[in-house]
Amino acid sequence: MPVIKYRSFEEAQKAMWCFWPTGEYYRKLADLFEFSNQIFSHFQRPLPGILKYKSFDQSSRLSIDQNPKSGN
Image (cartoon, rainbow, N blue to C red; front, side, top):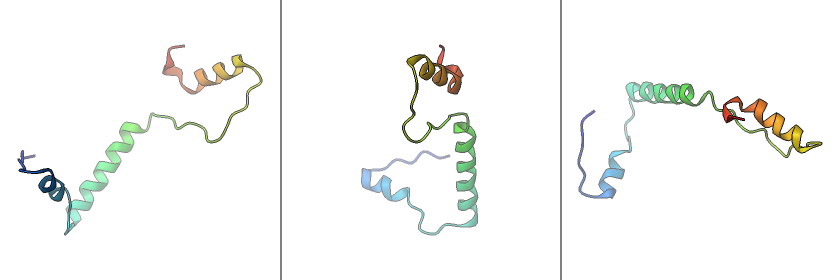
């Protein structure tokens, strides 16, 4: 990928826009999304809502089970 120097921030912003996308542009975009999904697939999303626990021990046990790399 070549290095491009810009004289202003606005000029650099305009260079990021693609006004006439081609098939290759969409293939590169799909590859980028696939790559990002591979990188971030090991992250677990938090459970939605509020969780109710009977004790502090139960809450800490569940957090360790959901995130085994936490070191606890």
